[in-house]
Length: 634
Image (cartoon, rainbow, N blue to C red):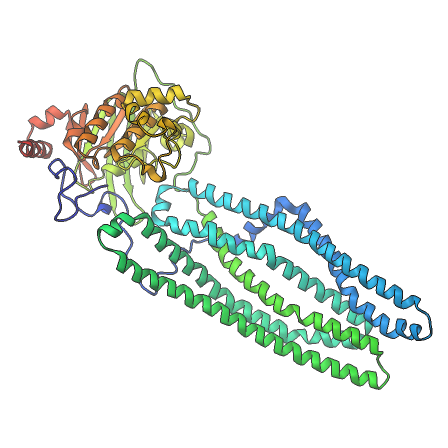
């Protein structure tokens, strides 16, 4: 809703606007949230999710790819077996092949050498095959997840989007999905590789010498404690990091989307200060994550090196005493090095895992949200429109409404809008006009009562039927990137070019469209920035006319236009309203003149009801406003 800036005239001089200018949020919409303090600014994007929702989400993403996951697992098993055969072959070479070679028997050394080469080649080929298979699975999973987020965000109701900013949605679909990509592409290979190598190596060490195997297993206890400690601390840090980057994205998106008022009101410096604060917080949290990783790596390497040194010294003592073969000690030293080296890689995996877990938790919380205006379990159909009775009848039956943020906007009321009639709804900002329109469009459901369309409760209508039956044209006619023709055809995707041009001609938009560089094929660019506000509104009317709804809602469709633009739009309104039930939310009295009926609202109630002439002849608020408007024109 557009209101005059304090101390400045409204775009049209302010003479025709009904009611005093008050904060925009008073018009039934939730009040804007306060500026976040340093203590709570970074936790506002956390959405509740059922326990175990993250695990359930991940399993549901992997379930369609079970076959390929099994193939990837087999490839990794074989690759690890080929790779871990190396030290065992070294032991055979030292203890058997070299003594045989000294005795002029070259066969064992040749066999061991050939086996070593073959195992190395097999390990490389199998690792390539595993990476290829797992990469395909991970990309398909990420493709599915991004699609789920996008589809679910579109399906969620308007009240959710008023509470949860688009910047946070973007963060969920980009930064958080990217964290999961790192886990799937790199982390899972690290985890599975480490786990398999530990199992293989411990088994081989026990096979070579049970004492060395037992010592290696026991040395893992302090390493396990380190991993658990790192996991607990890093999870908290990564949750904060995910929230911090979301706050940065939200601020950036908000500033770029509002760049005109930012520059008009010289908000660059305050915005820069706030962005610097958010960016520094993200830097600090990121630094904490790096330091935590550094502590883990240093501690794990220290424990691993001490354990390795102790076991090798003990093994050397046994070799000197004849209780252990030299080749077995050499193989054990190689295996122990391989056993402890992945501990660093395990830390990298945990790094990716904690980041992905925090991100997956937030994505799961988003996907767990349900629309506040759900689809009906058993949808009903609207009666076929009677060509002899244009439009559809609208009935508000015992309707009461309050937003989640609190405060009753519409006290209980009853209202009937006859089919084929145009009803203008006027009143000061905050009177409940737009809320009434949003209930009719079913952007919200009433707290109590029903809204009926030709006797059918809106809650019983499937979404497509409702959108075909009721169309809203808002104050800011939103155009999507694409051609003019594409934007007109949004309400009727199957329309032909002839249908599109016929609708544009009926509205009076054909001439300006054909004057564009590429006519109907001209790209209007972001939000229709290539054409004027009045032209965007005409395109929106052509879109509504082509959709041919039974009920049309015009929410302040002329309030932001200049006089020539307003007149062009008003001419188009006569065409688009003909033969339909119409609700016109009006802030200008010139818009009201086309209505059959006028409702004056105050405090969520209808205080005056009648034709424009009847109300002008009376002594109510509408008559006073009309007289003030007439005086301003003299």
